[in-house]
Amino acid sequence: MGNVLIIGAGGVGAVAARKCAMNRVLFPHVTLASRTLEKCEKINESVGGVLDVAHVDADNVDEVTRLIERVQPKVVLNLALPYQDLSIMDACLATGVSYLDTANYEPLHEAKFSYTWQWAYHDRFRDKGIMAVLGCGFDPGVISVFCAYAQKNLFDTITAIDILDCNDGNHGKAFATNFNLEINLREITQRGKYWKDGTWREIDPLSVSRDITYPEVGPRASYLIYHEEEESLVKHIPGLRQIRFWMTFSDTYIKHLEVLQNVGLTRIDAVSYKGVDIVPLQFLKALLPDPASLAADYTGKTSIGALVRGIKNGQPKAALIYNVCHHEACAREVGSQAVSYTTGVPAITGAMMMLKGLWKGKGVFNVEQLPPEPFLDEVARQGLPWQVQEMSLGEAEALVPLDMG
Image (cartoon, rainbow, N blue to C red; front, side, top):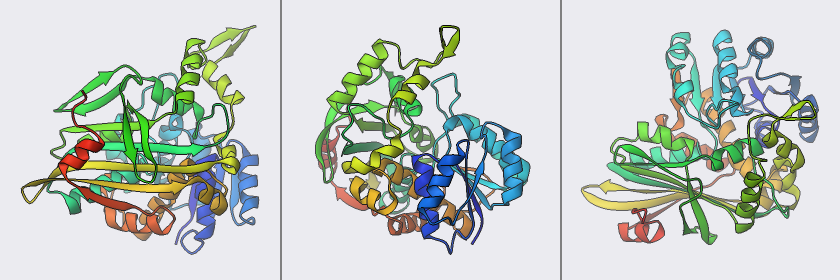
């Protein structure tokens, strides 16, 4: 169907590359590129050598541009770090190749992620006649498509969305993150934020929590944090009055995080040590397990969904749209843990939509702006089946009260 270039050979890139190798009809020629060529070579070996591999510094626009010109892909899958989104988008503009990523841009020296930097590329991508698809992982990604599906098929008006993200897995480590540690800790240690009645309301980090009962898991302590899909869903779901994002963290995780913050190891500014500038968070990342290494001993499951409330035919209703994914099943299929799997599978599904012409357009798009049904059909076939549980407003209120209390 078309050549693709995957940039990034971490846990998500590995899943995407292995799933492409399982879908050779759609992905007859895949190039996997990273700053660390050895990672690419190891992944390629695991799929029988069917990939091409390349070295690339994703921060270097000229280097990425030269690689794209050599590979001639129809789409570039950016599965590197959010710091590199703009440089890869610039290279796509220079070469006239469409783009897809899983996480929005974040400046290296400031813990602030936003779509505004990438939305500003819309006119240039439109004028070039190419497409950029933003946030095609799970959350953002599948969750955002769940909301688009609900808007199109289940509701006339959506008034409230609660995104519920539970990882009920056990990797056997005292402390480890399920995706890039820098991005993970920068994300959850900044101030929380949620949308209500036309304004953003801020809270102290991890200061609001409640028990939420997740499908196939049960009640778990969940914390209100700010997450990127809130920014785009507020823009693209008309009539939305409230949106919040809840994520589970164990007591052990919270305890370790507090200690790391107290001793300064989550700082992102450089500290001079014996004449050498060291960023504490980057040093901590070097000390802790690589998320891609967690798969072998990971047990349990993820349970992630969107609790949507609104109006249909003049009557109030609610629905929970969700997926449950098992860490052990992911390890058996592609040698990954479920957090990497639930991000990598949607990325290659989004690429399929673009290659087939089911997602098309000129400019920059978030996934909720694109047809939801073909994506959801395919993502289920690729390993992420989803369920819809319709409920009354009373049942939704018992699950997650609308009032912050």
